[in-house]
Length: 75
Ligand SMILES: [Zn+2]
Image (cartoon, rainbow, N blue to C red; front, top):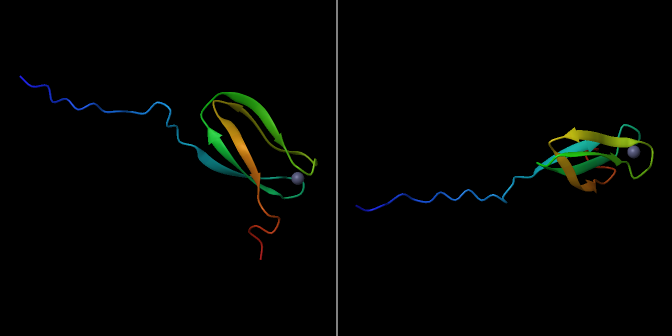
């Protein structure tokens, strides 16, 4: 008898990160963040200090915030 069962490796550390876009309600600055699956309760404040871009609480965290150029998406 030969055991031919193939081992299916399901890499535990390979979590998919999702990029999410947020727009500041104050100055319309566009930010991109990476959504990762870990519990967090935080908020991200706009670089212009005119408000909080996003507030989150739950099973996801948002990291690696990047601001887009001001003219992003404009013509
Ligand atoms: Zn702003």
